[in-house]
Image 1: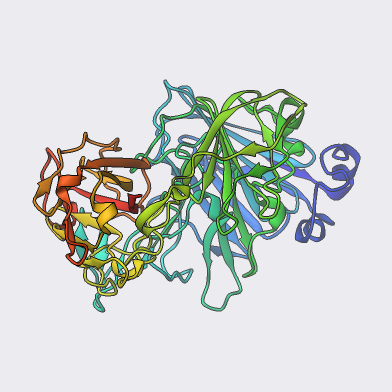
Image 2: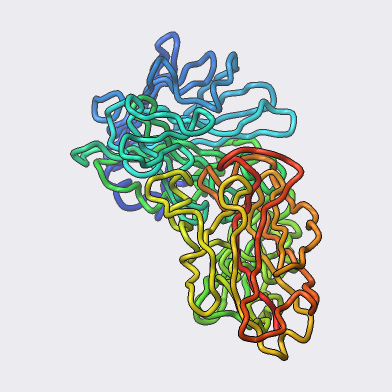
Length: 554
């Protein structure tokens, strides 16, 4: 069977779909003489987009078994296909077409996956619907032919020459640098797409992410984005990744996310989730689809009480969806669009640190306008005798912090994890961003107090952004030792070794009595930090923490 839709039919029947503004940039030229078609070869549905892309979907299991761009096959390695998770298995697969689109629907129990092609485009649009009873859908994996594209960075490595460092998925190259699919060095808020080009930069294959409204973890979450292994290169769309996860799953329709092919350039910006016009998908009959008319918007007049040197992100979350918007650096104005109706917890983050929490309600077709919000919970505004770091919810500025999102702590580029600190002399960059019980316990901070300061008790605050296997600091000051703090919240998975410092921002406070201090102002007080836990581990998998800030309040 063969179905072909030519340009005349496209214009006659597809005006509502391909109206003004629906195609932009390179799309318009490709669609000008497009003929979209599909056939059934007995095993697969074969879709020709009428541009330079032909792809095949197996009609028994819904795998994407082939994608040929400009006559070259780029799909697969080791006999593996591109697929939901590691393959759904036996599924009901159907195909339908309009004058402008071909839609393949894959049904596996209550999980439904869609592939959609549009006439004249070198893109495969995908959506995945799942509920609590569905087969787990952790990710969609695009498997690429080895050697076809060139990868570089922390998430790229030569699989023939590396040795394993940790858990069979973190590797060390011969030059001592470390690599893993964990080390893409990007938070969700930081990227629109992942992928690579060939060495000549004449072909690019990209996976443009969805808006992640049904994902978990918020704007600062770090997940797997791609694997640049020479033997098994992959691209990922992951609605929920369990490692270092801070939220429960969300259910419903995730997408669109787009497998996009170019002649070496980046994918068209019209595909980016933050700019994508999806009105053309309203007629596709996607399960769980909510079009623009069924969504609303929240805007804020401004944010007062900001630290103008910091970036502020406004997050919205409930059990159904999550969204975020970056506040204007001058006024604090923010706007979050295309939100599902409902009541949301609204959180303002300074950097990644929550400094204000409230609520916002979204109505379909409506705009909720919020008056200026004043921040009153920034811990950085408290007067301190000394402070190491900045309260911003990240270990930025500390030793090795900038390396840890794309390398393992054992990487040859990492400075020594030691780093005793002398207040008034040392700089933040000399204090380690992480501490583990089996690596660098016993970090020391030296400081002096005036006679007046030493005559009274003070509060010591230690902010942490993540705890591994319930690690937390127990402190001693001179001969005084604190109680062991309660275990901070944790995801109970790897975090500090897989490119993320973020789990639950926690501030630990220690009431240090006046009797703990040196009474002579010329003498150094010595603060010792030891990581303690009821759990055990070795090396970089021993109990540990990521530091946000440490200070002694006045």
